[in-house]
Length: 203
Image (cartoon, rainbow, N blue to C red; front, side, top):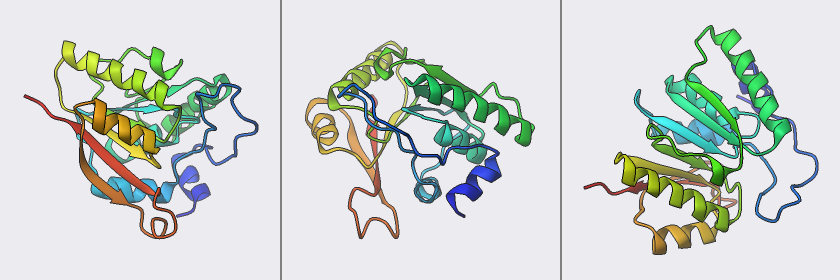
């Protein structure tokens, strides 16, 4: 299906382009993950009832709402831009109205990623290169600190991942690469078109 057809299926609007750029060097221009990529990701990667996925830089809410549509799991969207956050809230209402489901599993927060207090239920974290590695390091530190307080199974999902993210994860954290998912039709033209799944070893 096309981007617009998927939006229509979910009764949301996420396909409009962002105008302008963030003034801060640390926060990147918003762009939603293509539905075609999400299709392939979640064909291979499944979420369970007890999982709670956090999308850092969720924009208008495409990924959290798509995940809820597929798996009915709890989702959290973190967005620093007030306008995008308000659009995500509207999309949540539109999605719930069409799906005729309770919205208690879908939460959006308007805050900086590094200021989001990691919940003990959060165990899956999604990043589409939303900010600089300096912010990424702070977020990963918050995740690891949360695990010290409440040990659990943790995985990171990274799309179009920056090299400095990979260097930091592989050289300065206990995370290990679990899986690589290449997006068919895209990867041959651009090797950034892939998802990398990192897990935190337990025990």
